[in-house]
Image (cartoon, rainbow, N blue to C red; front, side):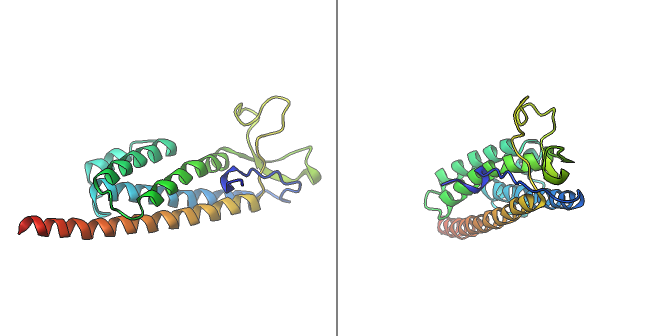
Length: 193
C-alpha cells in the first residue's frame, strides 16, 4: 500500500484561477512550519528536558541547521541517544516513526515551496496548477511531463496532513516530556535519600 506522501496526483482539471493556488500554498507552508516547530519541541525535550529553555546552547545550535532533512536527522540522533539512556520510555519508537514520516513529508513540502503557479497550455481549459519550473532538472526532464502538478485541493490535502503530523508529534513529545519529568524527579528523590 502506498504511503500518503508517496502519492503524487496528476489531476486532469486544474483551478480556474491562480488565487486558490496561492492561498493553498501559503496555508500549506504555514502548516509545515507547525511541523517544524513540533520537531524543535521534541529536540528540546530530549536535549534539555523542558520546553522552557530557549537560550540553552543545544537549542541555539539547532536553529543554525538550515535543511529540514538535516534537522530531522539531528533530532533522530538525539532521540536515539536519549532512548539509550531512558530505555523504558513509552512512546520512543512512536516518536522515531513520526520523525521518519516528517522526513517523507518534507519532499511534498519542498514541491509546494519550490513550485510555480501557472497555466499549462496543454492542460484542459488552460487550467492553473502548481508544478516544477522548467529549470528544475530534478523534477522536470526534457521531453517528459513534470514530476507533479497540483491543484489547490491537492495542496490542501497535504496541508491537512501537515497539521495531523504536527498534532501527533506534539502529543508524543508531551508523553516523552511528562514521562521524563516524573522518572527524573523520582530518581532524584531516591538519590537524595
